[in-house]
Length: 71
Image (tube, rainbow, N blue to C red):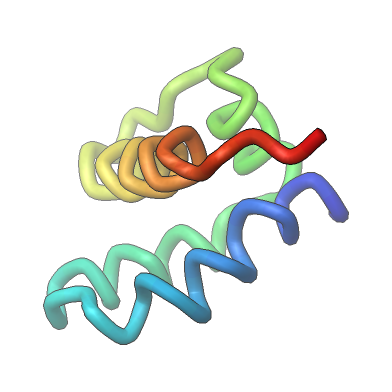
């Protein structure tokens, strides 16, 4: 899903290498989730019941929001 790639690929390239081992494991677990769930979480329509997954979604969204807007 392109919308997910826009969030996840830059995060994987730029942030993943700096993550702790625990956060790297959380990220891998996040990638194992269904696209429909990921989309709902990243669009903030729902929140994962798994606290580790919810933490990682928040980290990715916070990073995306900190970037300058593209016009």
